[in-house]
Amino acid sequence: MAKLILLGPAHDAAGTREDFFDGDTLDAVLNEAVERYGPAFEELLDVSQVWLNGEPASRSTPLDVHDEVTVLPPVSGG
Image (cartoon, rainbow, N blue to C red; front, side, top):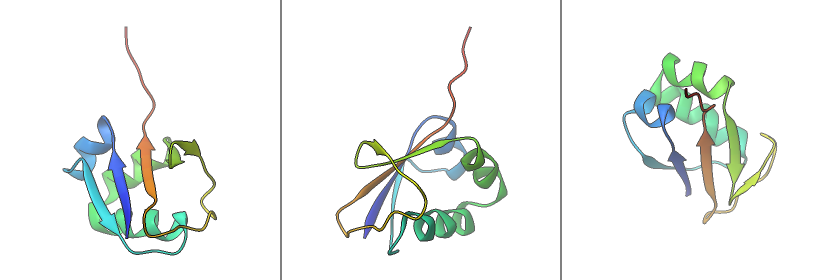
């Protein structure tokens, strides 16, 4: 199972900081996360970066059972 790590507003939208998903690609895991967490998470995911094991990755990237997927929402501040 791939571990999904949710930072900042992604954590708020999903209601959890981390979760585990079965999926053979990054896209499969993210689609399952959208189903689990709903439209607010999906909207945030559309503007977020997604990293795999600490590196930027495309949604078609294959996953291994020990991979970590991190959702990095945009940062704003003042």
